[in-house]
Image (cartoon, rainbow, N blue to C red; front, top):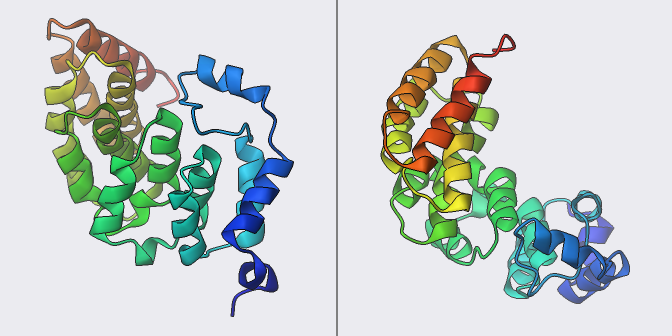
Length: 227
């Protein structure tokens, strides 16, 4: 059964709760980190998470929150949506709506990586020309490497040629996601560490500045004593 809070709260109630803890002075700081604040109200992620914890899973409410287009409401939606009820159509719709790196990362890491479509969508989106859709492909790879404990090493080895192929994308939010995916794969276990390092060394031979940064940064971390 749904808790009384889940049953009682409407989308209007949730927006009111978000506005209670909003702070417009946060927007300039968010913007300085490259976050699109055109529809943001200035709520910190810890406050969004606290509200999500109270609401728990509520898929219908998540759909309504997403449709408000409010930045923090969409992040909250990614926290309370039910991954088992996410269809391919909804997956595609939400990714197409990404307009900021943090919304991309939160939605992929909170929800989309837990769906049965995550691996296929990571591969599909990696070829997309839109910046945040393409970022989503590589964020999904990174999130899967961290969260999917049962996935076979072959899943991640198959991601490496894609990472190598797209390492020359100079767009900041794409190259950072490509680097993130490479590092997280390489930190999963010793076998994948070796495979990721070989991939990074191959990327290092590419001429683009993006590729050289991705490879150099990954090699530095994956060769550290910690790993």
